[in-house]
Length: 236
Image (cartoon, rainbow, N blue to C red):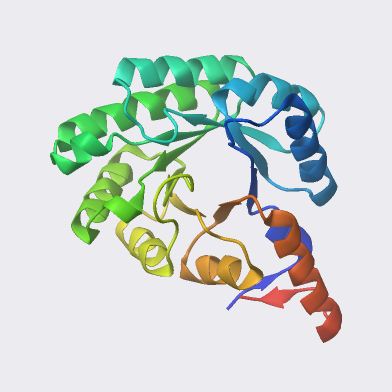
């Protein structure tokens, strides 16, 4: 087990609003909340990169753009263009949805080429890259093969889910991804993480970043538990 302070827990949170009807006011509020809680990143659609990056100027909070989101059904060229466009508009983290059609076809050369091109665009810009697997739709063998490819290509993270389609993060999938992927590649859990216990379980399984829209109540619950224990940390 490891000890985590409130700030260390908050710095694992990707504070998320990818709703298609999100307003500019929602984006400003999201960024204000991220600043108040010192979250690591705001996770938004690529379209919102500019407004969020502007709101976060002068902070150490990143702007994360979702690419080919949430279905991943776009050509590699389209995804690369969208990635570069989001980076040009202020994003410094990229979460892209993998092409599940090609995964299910077991066209691993395609999957590797797509990943390599997007990761290269991120590396060139000094940005963090995350590959969204959508594990709900995958077999353990498919998850492991994608992680093997990621071990070669070296995105910053492999990520469980978009959180917008069926299923979400499970402890089993996070543990499998952590075991299968190179230690240099981190694991992000996303989708259905709504309580402090969910958060803690994902961290215990090996996740180093948590994508969720419930970061505030989760952090407040950890804060309450620490206060009750008379401690300034919690063990996970």
